[in-house]
Length: 246
Ligand code: HPA
Image (cartoon, rainbow, N blue to C red; front, side, top):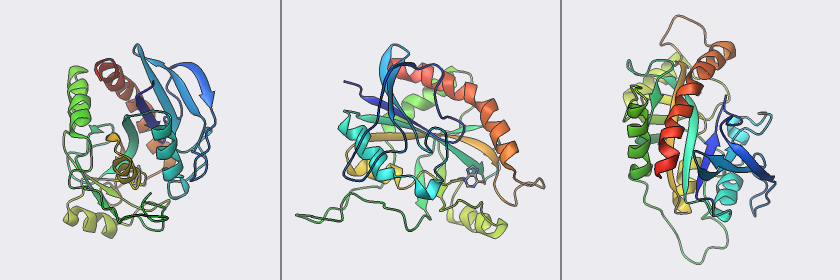
């Protein structure tokens, strides 16, 4: 049984290191996931890879079928999920290219299907989300990043925005006052849905740009993509150091 899944974000539609054994389209009570589940081997282990934005990537953050994705992974036997997300850096140490392992979330998203617990309930359910990420997996990822001689941020608050537009400078200032260190569009409801299904979920965020108003340069897709491409090798090193030991 394949117990580990990697959800790839912007710039990570497929992992080169995965030796693909099969791909499977999946259907769930919540619709189809973003893409076929890719079954393969990485670092001697069976893994499943899922491209969050589809393959080719055409699904914007607010249209991702988060419930379909997490349900499909649960149903295929997954117990742990490593999520790769690109983010903007808000606080001073969240510079482009840095890998960040957030430990908290503030959710600013809206109008997304964000729970499995709303229809046909036999009892009301409120999952504990005090610590939104799986601490054990987070710790493993952080030590893997250190082993790869990277300088990861080992705690950060991830502010999840609705997108797909980027933020205004004042919105970023407000997010900083709220306590956010990085900003992204896909961290929620993915983390909460994983918790609802009892999955161990941790995020590896890569800073793609300074958030709005934090640099004089305009934020362009080209600059974001260039930073993500440059950071991809570091993500691969983290995964290569993590997967064999979990
Ligand atoms: N804001 C929101 N999401 C993002 C950003 C950003 O600046 N960069 C990458 N994802």
